[in-house]
Length: 499
Image (cartoon, rainbow, N blue to C red; front, side, top):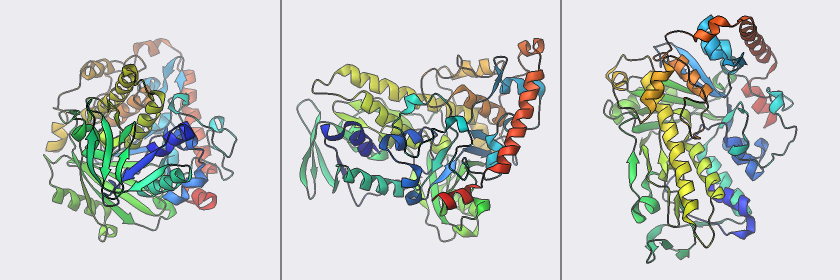
């Protein structure tokens, strides 16, 4: 992703070389994404038909949370902003007016997920017609241009996408070197001068991007940048993943990621076009790898029998700085929280976009480096806080693990925010103040879905306002959801016809 993006941004004005070992596999997961990922493909000029079939890709309209409040309870975190009436969101009005299920009462995407609907009509028109740009070819854009909430992201086979992008990049001038790095050489300043490889000898460069994952071979080992752990705030530090072959019949292609709470963590379920990606994210203080794999296989059922388990130790936290000297860490080598809100690939994309915006010249201005580091650190810290809310505010407390999630310390500022949210739902003034990919509506959806930290009552101001328009909006949401379910094709049928 980094190589192709930089080459697309700067063209022939820079040369880009990727050095990767054929003997070191990728982590092999990271199959769910964030709605901003469309800007990555748009920037490269790739339409969905260009890359989705090659990567077994499907659509993702949100995340389905199962058993986080109590066994059997389900709610959605969709890519959909809440409507407003008289200046108050429908989350505020719902607390006053009541209803059966907040997400289905106030948003349309949950109904589309339940019915396995695609986000597009057969003619390719987006169901949110106001967001359809009318063209077959994408227009170059970045996250900064996303002033609306785009209603879907993707699931894809990350290994296949990596290979697709390798071919795409080399066709456009990226040099790809398959070799083992034996040594990282530094100059008198401590900056990286070149790499020593087994078969290609020395590879020199001006800027070195560390994409070595949790190993952090350049940023941590060579450049000696300290790593700041988030482990005191977030419980999980391991995962076991399975790739489950499956005949992806229509009923199995729900257009969302599913996160199902378990005794010591949660299990993801991601439907791709040709298989199911699944894994158990857990805390090894409460569960052994053997127990986790057994739980996962029992959850999947007989189809998991021949699937090879991939056990992963996760480094939870971020580097003190992601750019030092002439070395920039992007992706897992920069930082990671956990897969719960599908932010791993989002962090890669954000890191690359910020690198373009802060790209150096021969003067290597420290202000550019500092600006990059601030943006990355704030983004990671903000996602950390958002995920802490998931565990702290989940009503579930029926095992040692879930009880312990309520006892962990809180990052600076979060306790004060939680206290304010016990009276008034989150808004622009009370959520984490720096860009981290999540808007106030996401905090509202999670608090009302998780159920463990709800305001004691609705806002007093609503008692003085006419609620007729709010009731009418609730009716409109139900009518629109029913109409879309009745007219949109299933995801299975849409992908079969489009690709």
